[in-house]
Length: 312
Ligand SMILES: [Zn+2]
Image (cartoon, protein in one colour):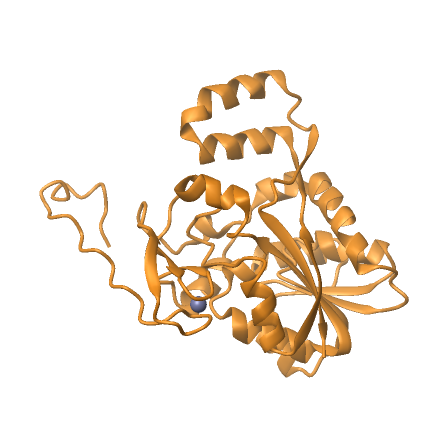
């Protein structure tokens, strides 16, 4: 790993290009090509893995599969490194955004329909905000979360969120009517395996609802290397074709795919804008002076999607 603070770094030869991956991790095709070269040093640490991380545009090489269109980091951190980093995440900015997260989730939860006493598991529940919204709607809702800090925050508010992996929960033989994964799959070391585990956690006919960034969206393609979601903690970048195909291959039937809107505060949005587009920082700073920081702003650029899939 190179470091910019290394006094010898300026004299060192340019790093060799990363070796091309042999196979696409999704479809095993050998038609892989470098899409975005590495930027910044890849550091697997809790700071870069917080939900509200401002570490945009810092990532290892990102490759594209010519067969299925998947974008993926390679090399990727090991699962053990990821578990350790996510376990240590603490993210007070996220707590300050609570009201907006609740607005986001209340809108998103409409896709679940009536609760009718159904049991729901939120995977990657973080501070438990979606579990709270699902309970408001009448679901018997619980969650699992890797961050000890975040799951503790949820439990402190009386929510059933345990510090557990999806594999651990599935091994206990638990069964649910609904499993949700909000902006989780792009962070997983083994997305196919974890979707298989999600299928095991659902009764036949049960539903998986998941959201993620859409690398095939017009915004993502137009921005290219400037797309702000290209970052360390996002290992896999799916689109509206290859993610449904993956879901179908592990025992689901895809019943809906839609745009997914986030509601954020104006202050948070402008900080994200500044971190994502340094050239616009003066504009962003000016707007921050003029805009009430807490003003809720719904954001939907068409590059976030939600997919509903039924377990066969
Ligand atoms: Zn592929």
